[in-house]
Length: 212
Image 1 (spheres, rainbow, N blue to C red):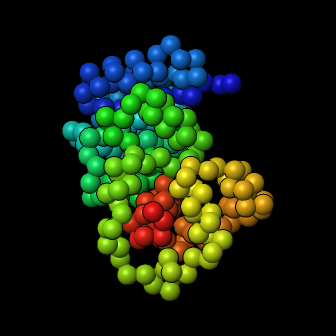
Image 2: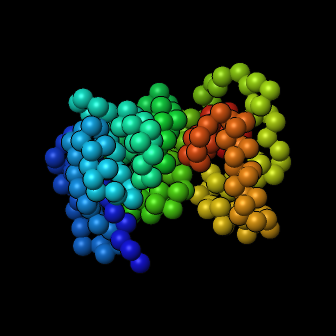
């Protein structure tokens, strides 16, 4: 198995040291580099081609949301896992809408962090329980013709499985349909919820009360 290549982005050297220590010595991971702000993260991501970027949210200069936006504009394939102390919906939603695969808090236990990185590498959405709770009950914008009320029963089934961390393959097996069909359902869900990826779809679903 090829090691998951990590880029650690945080403006605090002690935090970077701590994160590096979490993954040091584990042959499943390789810390390829560290950055102290978003601009440096974008440059290093292009040079080092990490699989997963552990990204702080608020940093001097370019913050996490802008860095994710730049990376997505460049078409960089790395999954971005936000790791921060901020858990309010006004912090969470911009990051997820920009394209973050997941959102964890810095008080997460070591094992939870490792699981989250593995899940993010596989394209699964990762939301800390406190973050998911912060999204519940948040008032969404009025839905238009393609609003969430028009999700089909099968689309809701797919969405619930995705929220539970299921991959396309697992969802297909549980629903007895093909992976291609799952992908098609996801595209329809993204369009109806006005989002671009799995993590944003899960966040929007919590926010609008489609799942609990």
